Amino acid sequence: MTQKARYFDTFQGGEVGCRLCPHGCLVLHGQRGLCGVRENQHGTLLTLNYAKAVALQNDPIEKKPFFHVLPGSLSFSVATMGCNLQCAHCQNHHISQTPRGPKTIPGRDTPARIVVEMAESAGSKTISFTYSEPTVFMEWAQDIAEAALPEGLRCVSVTNGYTSASPIRDIASKLTAANVDLKAFRDDFYQKICKAKLQPVLDTIRLMRELGIWVEVTTLLIPGLNDDEHELRDMAEFIASVDKAIPWHLSRFHPDHRMIDTPKTSLQSIQTAREIGRNAGLKFVYSGNVWGDAGEHTHCPVCDHIVIERHGFSVRRNLLQKGACPKCHEPIEGIWD
Image (tube, helix red, strand yellow):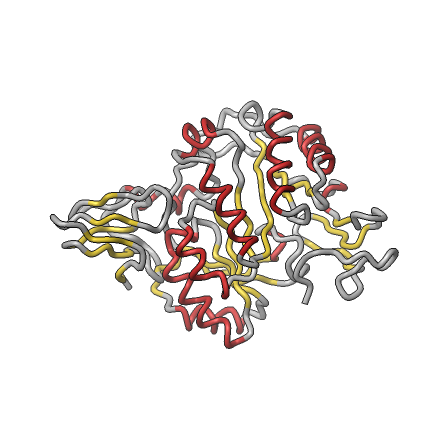
């Protein structure tokens, strides 16, 4: 299923410049970009992971997490190997980082039309590009979204946001929503922990909202690294400057990958961060990986009435009436039908 990439330039001498993400890799013949799944073969950049699925399964859409997109529905999750970041705490490192080693890319050949058929058979309302990084399987994601549209299936993306503007613009009309990881608000965190930069992620969040994509943001709070109150305030104010209705998911860190000695996030840290988000003017700030916490519910931003009650990935009660609070009738932003 190897396919020619859609975002690259070929230079004199056979080098190719990848334009898929802000790394802008210059790739020599026979070599791969930083993502490990794009290779220059005689002046042509190939996507070695095209349609090579390593995940094909139904999930609650709350698991992504999306709290303002079709609550209580199932989302058919798809992924290939590969990522353009190298996060030290990645919980899916077994599929995101593996391609940097082996010559061949594992996966089950699954054309876009088959993905759509599987999603329909599974009773899914959406298809999620998730688990690894959708940016590095952009061509497959675009083809799936194209095939899903006439069948009435929506597509959503769970992404690190490290994507160039052109591929985002190309998929925007067929992408209903995106949950973007905003991992920190300091460039040194991105450089040391993720081998990337902060600004392109901020640009992606702004661009997606400008293009009409529903955006939710997730931040994994890692003790001592990105949970400083001043940094969280800056982060919250940035999100609010884009759109105060963007839901902000504050997730609890659990040790993983190369950060197994880092302690898990305290509940107090999550609650403090939620308060910072609300004080910055954000309408919807959620607790993540803290099942049973009051921060899992959606409250009306005007009267504070619970409009969606959750426990973990389950919706216990959805009280919305035509997308509005049943008590004060305030419209609640999101995709509800």
